[in-house]
Image (tube, rainbow, N blue to C red; front, side, top):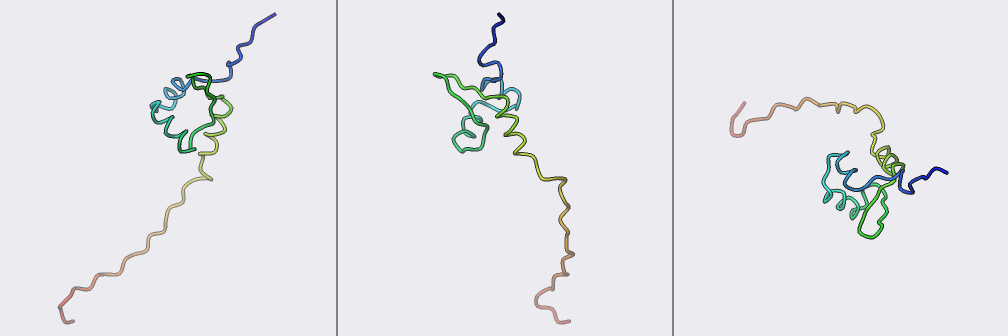
Length: 84
């Protein structure tokens, strides 16, 4: 019988931080602000399911290519105190 690790589909906070190039403090702050991926805590250790991380990353995707804002040409400024 082969053994399957219960947390095989999870990643530690340290590993996630390394993959995202973010500090543990940032991951903690995101959690407190409700912005980061869902996580589980076992004792003092924090884990993220890879599926939750993938879902969270997907939610950050934009709706398509960014559109250029149309820029209106500003009218020339009038100088004060001069008679035309």
